[in-house]
Image (cartoon, rainbow, N blue to C red; front, side, top):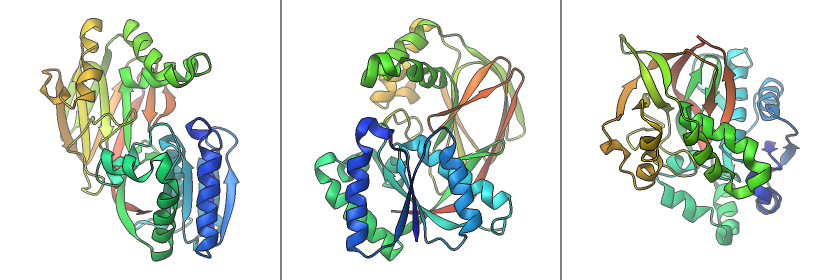
Length: 318
């Protein structure tokens, strides 16, 4: 029996329609399922962990929500592996199905080899076709085996980040009730107006780098923020972490970051650089939040965050 974990408030009301259409197709294909609706932060994590412990032969866990929902689910599955639900050697034996219903849905852009492909498949007027393709992939077991990254003990699928972009996510949550769908835009302006560079110590590839940074993104996938192509060279199957570093910038100059990201010209900025590694550590000097696929994890001053690549860790239906 497939276990479906649904975030009922994802995507500003799109979830019920998408769930109904998906279940209709699963019924048509004769696939058995059970549906669980999350009720709070980290509920998806605990439910996925529970499923892995109690049903290790489950044919698949399906996440219906945005990138944050999928991060919780993948982290719960990885935690169950670490906790002995199945052997620690090798990949997680239960596949994950991703049916996007969030506002960003960035990981599927890398999974489907590009933003255009993902947007074309999951357009509102093509949802029935998308449900049929997805359900067929469940039945025929069409999968890709992707990497996961852990930040200390918390796994994620797409991109972790600290600095300006993490603060934007934090501010957007606070502004969501007031500004609705425009909360992210309002948060960009608020975050830039209050921007201060982040003093960091970064350890990677045997080097120790100290400096002030506007943002640092630790990438498995290529896209974040609803399709911003932050790391074009990242690959979810290459066993490498791609790190995007944006050196400290003044408030006026930070206005260049997001327009340049939108036209994929940020790599031309002198303040932007990249490195690849298997693992790295970042030490924060101040109170900051670590953002993992849109979910915020507050960190303490002098907190050291260790990022580690876990190659070929999870089968994902495509």
